Length: 71
Image (cartoon, rainbow, N blue to C red; front, side, top):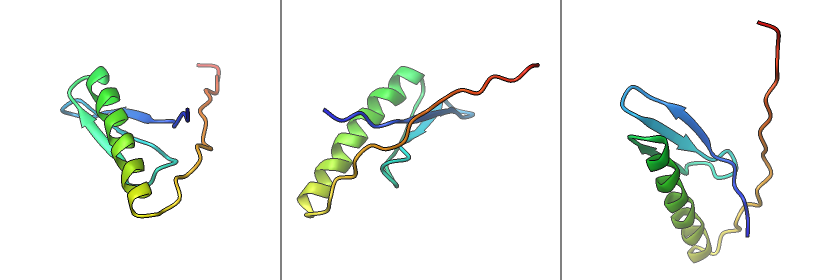
C-alpha cells in the first residue's frame, strides 16, 4: 500500500485538494470529509490511467511538517 500526501485548502465554497506527488491530480468538495473521499477516488483514477497508458506510477516522496514560531 502506498500513502500519497494530499494538501487540503479551504476555498470560498468548500475545500480543494491536490497531491504534490501526482501533478494534475486535484479534487474539490463542500466539506473536508467530502474532499478527502473525492481525492481518494481521484488518486485511484489517476493511477489507473497511468497504468493503462503504460506510464510509470510515481512513488510517494513528499511529506509534511509543521514549524512552530513564537506568536
